[in-house]
Image (cartoon, rainbow over all chains, first blue to last red; front, side, top):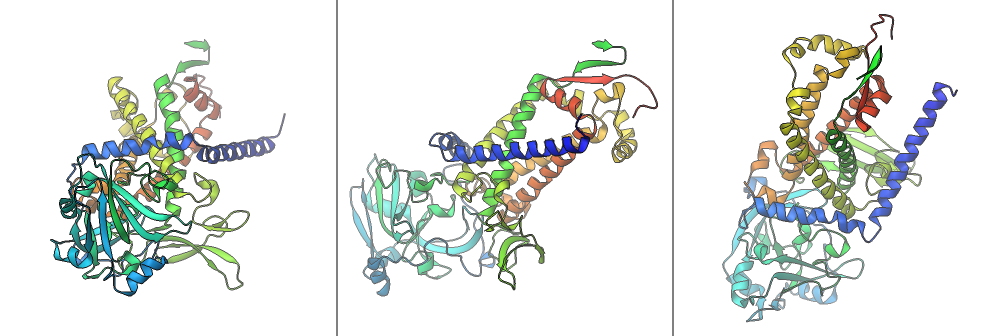
Length: 254
Length: 275
C-alpha cells in the first residue's frame, strides 16, 4: 500500500495535471470557429435583457465640472499618420468636411463652421473603456439627430456607420456603427470640443461621436463620413466595427 | 435504510441540487478566471467614479526593472509596494509582464475579447442556474427544511465555533443536518455575496447605469463597483477554500459521494474512543 505522502503527491500531480488539461482545453475551444459563436449568445442575451429593462431614451448619468478628470486619457490612435488627415490637421481642419450619405434623401457635407453654427449640446459624462478604466470629460457638439434631420434617412436605413481617418497597426481603417435608437438618442452628439476647448487630436479632432450608454470603442474618433445603411455585413469584415471584426461585441452596453 | 447495525445510507442531496451544484462550480470557476483575464487589460482598481481623478489607484499590479536590469513584478496596495515576481506582474517560463499569470486566466494568453465572451456566457449560466435553484428551493421548501437555522441552532453557535476550530465534526444523527455556522455561511453566500457580485457586475454596464442615473453612486461610483466586484470575487474564493477544506476534513469520500450520487453514510456507533 502506498504511503500517505506518496499518495498525496500523486493526488497533487493528478489534480494539477487535470487543471492544466482543462485550461489547455479552454484555449483550444477559444481558437475554434464554433465555440466562440456559442459563447457569443451571451452578447445577444445581454443586448435583449438590457434593452428590455432600460428605456430607449434612458439617459446616461451626467456630472459636474468638479468631477472632470484632470486630463482626458487618449486611447488607441492618438495622431493618425494618414497623409490626407495630416494635411487637414495642418490647416486646423478648415478644409475638412463631414460627408453624410448612404440611404438618405439629401446627402450632405458639413464643414466644422456649419456644425458649430448648429444647435449644440454640452454634457459632462463618464467614458468607460472596455479595458476597465473610466474618465470624465465635458463634451460639446451637435446632436446626431439634428444632422440626420438634414439628410433625411430612408425608411430602410437601420444603422449609422462612422468611417474614420485613422489607420490601425494592422493597416485596417477604424470604423464603427450604431443602430438608430442610439443614433437618435439625445446624448448622442458629434463632439467638436472637449472641456471647453477645440477637440484635441489625441481625442479625435476634428470630430468624434459620443454614445454615452456604450463602451469607449463605439465612440469613433477622426470621423470623415457617416453612412446610413440597412446592413453592415458588406463593410470590412462585416461585424460592424474595427474591434468587432477582431472579436469584440457589437453591442457594447456592458 | 439501515445497511448494518452501526451505519446506514441515506439520500443527502437530491438530484436537482447535485446537478445545480456542479453547474455552479463550473460557472463560478470560469467567471473567476475569465474575470482575471478582463482585469489584466487594466490591472488597477480605484475608488470613486473614474480612474483619472487625481487620486492614485487603491491596487495596481505592474512590472518594472530592478537595479540589475531584471524584470520584477510589483503589486501596490494602498500605496504599499510588494514584490510579487513569478505570480503577479511578471510570470511564466519566459517571464512576461502581465498582472495575473496565464495559468489563472481564461483564455491563457492576453486576449480581452475572448475573456469577455467566456465571462458573459457563463454569467448567464450562473444566473439561470441560480434562479432555478431559488425557484426549486422555494417550491420544495429546501431553504426552510435545510438551511434556515432552528431555535436550537442559534443557541449552539458558541459550541459550533469551538467545534470548527478543533476540527470536530458532528457524528451520527447530527451529521444529517448542517451545523449552524454552515447554514449561516451558505445563506450569506447565496443571499448576500452572490447577488451583490452580480449587482456590481451590472453596475459596470454603461447601459444599465442609465436605468436610474446615479444608482451606482450608492456603492461609491463606477470604478468602486469594479473594485467591489473584484473584492467580492476573492471573497468567493475564500469561501470555496474554507468549503473545500471542511469537505476534506469531515470525510472527503462520504462528502464527495453525497454530492455525486446523493448517498451519504451515517455512522451511528457511539464508541467514545472513536476518532
